[in-house]
Image 1: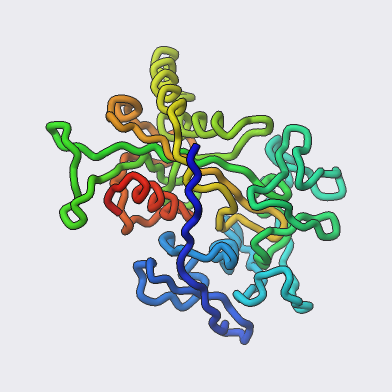
Image 2: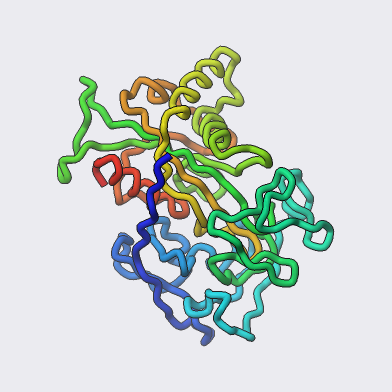
Length: 330
């Protein structure tokens, strides 16, 4: 697969909170909002690009899916190398995780995970390289988040996901490519799902199962989330499998591999992903399959790729890379 290096843009600035503590905020020339005055508005804006060194959504004031407030972390205190004796992060692990489902680790102390290595079938290595361990706990490689524990994440340390970006050219009724009226470049479309947990549109994807290779995860997640293959009849499933295998066996374009600025991240658990673009050039492969949302998606649709889209996490950045590599409208 071809690797496309990250082209992160924007800067993050510091503002003062109402309670007198530094409170992170940020602006971006790419963000469609002219002014963003608080970390809350940044967390709710899905189109903000951020520097990888100062995560934004991982510092949302209230941890997603809970009433737990994070300890406020200003931009200049994110780095673990910065001495900050006053740092008192809240500890939170969601009740669903503490119930010990099969996809979750036990609490630290109840087992001895082998961090920075392949721990049995669980890959605890980070795409970012070796991460620090402090008092037996892994430390988020991108710095403080204001919250310890695992939150909603199952694994201590990196939680690996895979995001398949399936694209096609937008075509008119005669089968010709449609070009954008302003840029005059051809329009790409991608398969997008509407997440049930937050209502945001996103690239279909999911967690890498223990012992599963990334290519298997990419194919499985797309089949389950965008084509609802789990509910298909045997004959339908066979047709889906044939088309999917054909597309996913083609050379994919690796768009991103690394840390994800995700609202579920904590000081000790964080999301990482591999995003790969699979393009249906002729439009007679996956494009002909009927889209149907799976259990984890509210809706699924082919959506025109454009810089004005509002998407989950940093998915918009992935699409920008795809559009520019394929010389399509952005």
